[in-house]
Image (cartoon, rainbow, N blue to C red; front, side):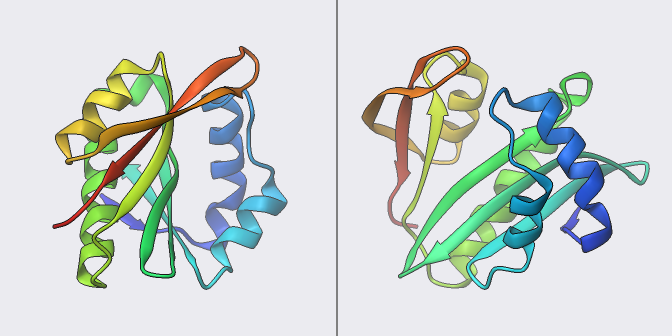
Length: 144
């Protein structure tokens, strides 16, 4: 199940960040995000446990998927796909048809997921990620 993130989810999502990312977002950044008028946060639940979360920013008629994370032991069970469906549908319902995201060049599973939603690579940010250093592939979904 996917639902909007609540304030009481912050501690769990902050822990999830530490597990999923080498450059994790802080509790304060997550808290600011759920209170932002531009950002939409959703959590993925399995048996009432948060197993993933995502963040979509809508600004000036465009969308940006800023974060999508699933606990390693819960991957390949459809949570990432459901969160992508939620974010893309949410954007389209608001007539936002252009959405971008950045992904580690080596993250082939994520790239395949994004491609299945119509995202295509358009640019590279050299050495964007740290720990380890890696390029970011910028992907865009344009049109409905």
